[in-house]
Amino acid sequence: MSEASANLYAHLRQAFPDDLNATAIETDSGQFYTWRDLERGTAMLANFLHSLDLPAGSRIAVQVEKSVEALMLYLATLRAGFVFLPLNTAYQSAEIAYFIGNAEPVVVVCSAQNFSWVSTLAFKAGTRWVFTLNEDRTGSLLERAAHASDQHVVAVKKPDDVAVIIYTSGTTGRSKGAMLTHDNMLSNALVLKDFWGWRGPDQGGDVLIHALPIFHVHGLFVAIHGALINGSKMIWLTRFDPKVVLLHLPRATVFMGVPTLYVRLLAEPGLTKEVTRHMRLFISGSAPLLLDTFKAWQDRTGHTILERYGMSETIMLTSNPYSGERRGGTVGVPLPGVSLRVVDGQGREVAPGEIGDIQVKGPNVFAGYWRMTEKTAEEFTVDGFFKTGDVGRVDTDAYVTIVGRSKDLIISGGYNVYPAELESFINDLPGVAESAVVGVPHADFGEVGVAVVVARPGVQLEPGNILTELKARVANYKVPKQCHVVADLPRNAMGKVQKNLLRSQFS
Ligand code: MLC
Ligand code: AMP
Image (tube, rainbow, N blue to C red; front, side):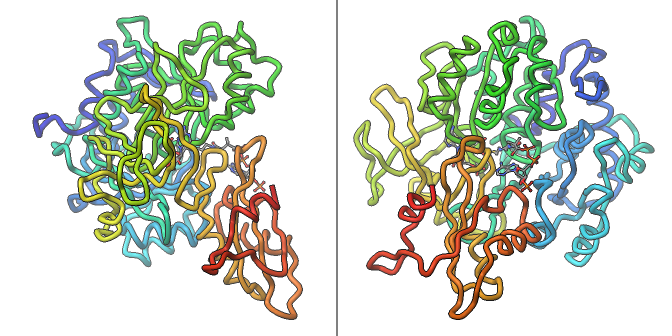
């Protein structure tokens, strides 16, 4: 690829339909955005960012509610050549302080409601500018950008230039910023365009229902890049509501969701073959899709969900085929260009069907963790494969099944929850001797956390108070759904807490 053409935005822009007055995005509150609106809006925001005279490689950290303007800010950051850093809206001050301290963004954008505490900690960390952007299209960012020109030449980027930093926790320790390049994202978007048979405007067009948050890989990259690089319209839902999705299904062709979204849709009597008749494709990912959900969806709608597998560090890795067999309980086959192998404890590739650690390589694999050279090196093998931390097998016909994780991670409703992070918060609470957080099955979220806590001698701990303390400190989805106070934690001969025993005890 030529250097001048590596900016992801330039490729997305090229795919816009010829008729820029056509609708690109229709929102659940009745707003319509044309392709020209996207082009002009992102140009103005990009020009505004340039006017701030930011150093090359500046990070723009963004914690705002989902809106089309927030999407435009993402696209504008790409086209201006800076680095976008999305942050979950549930993160609280200690979490945000860490991300801002670690990434040192020059610009932070937050909601007006959070401006006071976010700006205080951002300015303390050296951030130069803090702007606001609200769900209802108000805020200082848009006020300032309103004066910028709507003509903008897309910044020249090299394929390996970092476009986005996504924070993820990996196996241990504090969150790490996974650096994704323009080419990581472009190559993945182009592969998925073919693999999922997206139909461009000249082939009848696709319409995507976008119902996911836009601060993680699934909603921000897989869904948005997928629609934009195909010139496809999006029906933009600010938050997931199964009834609202049902309302829009008859006019849509593609839907993407984490398994919880499918579980909640199945609970709606209005989900029928008739309402999904117009749909071409239902895609699931970010967490294991239970076979029961897969089958129930087939029975109710006549559609077979296509399950795929990915992660923040790699975007999409495997997918069930669009035309071939979509095999329930598997995540399909490695995408074109992705090498995937399963290895044993010594790093030797195992025979087909045998279980081991999943390692991957490909143009989609990230450029490393932000300012963590050693940690990055640890996560790659000498021959350049990335250690996913997922455990699985590959069958003789290349279908991959994920059977577990070697990383201590709970996936709850598609969000990652790291027991080690919660345990360290709980252990710091007065009267706590030690704790363990484990994941147990849950009908709605797939898996949820349970905290098991040991009190210091002579201290009476109240489980409810522990959860209340956690609620005040961490994003709400991370708070365990239950807390149990026990006399001691089960340990093996090496002194390691036996989480498997806790899991079966509290399931
Ligand atoms: C919300 N809650 C959760 C939760 N989401 N608890 C556990 N796990 C979750 N995922 C809790 C809140 O803390 C709150 O509890 C209560 O549920 C209601 O909150 P809410 O905000 O009203 O919830 P709701 O809108 O119903 O959200 C549920 C959801 C959401 C499933 C729609 O979690 C969601 O959008 N998940 C998608 C996540 C996603 O996009 N992941 C992609 C990661 S990328 P309380 O007690 O405070 O009231 C990735 C790579 C890949 O993994 O392969 O794609
Ligand atoms: P994240 O770091 O948020 O990107 O989460 C990535 C993790 O989600 C992967 O390492 C897997 O453990 C999990 N994951 C993603 N897709 C699937 C899937 N289809 N089935 C099972 N686990 C998945």
